[in-house]
Amino acid sequence: MSTADLLISADSHVEVSHDAIKAHLATKHHEEYDAAANGFELRKMKGTPAANQAWKSVRNRDDDDDPKRFSLTSRPGYQEGGARLADMDLDGIHAEVLFSEVSFFRYWGDLEV
Image 1: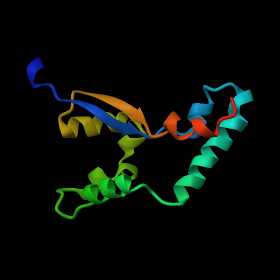
Image 2: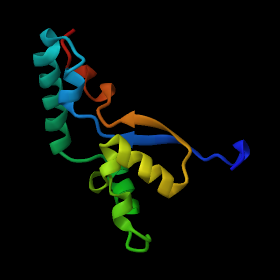
Image 3: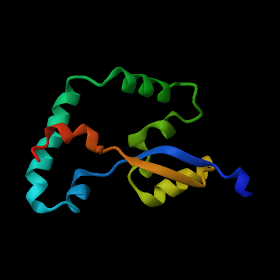
């Protein structure tokens, strides 16, 4: 494959657990982090925004070759690096830009600092 033929995904997502994040966060901030994450979960329980609902419906269509392939939580590559590489090979992707599902903008309003 030539350089001109390389496929790069510029908007992929990966799950990173709160525990993994807290492993790199000073212990003194853990309580406030947990409170902010819980605040987001409470807001989310009130209803998923329409944009997310639309995205889910497109990804769960019956006419896809393999609907489970598009289900974020059913693919090991959503959480595991080696499995992610296998998914990239399956899709013919040479490189990816990954964004964590744990996004700071969801929690910053709940932080006291």
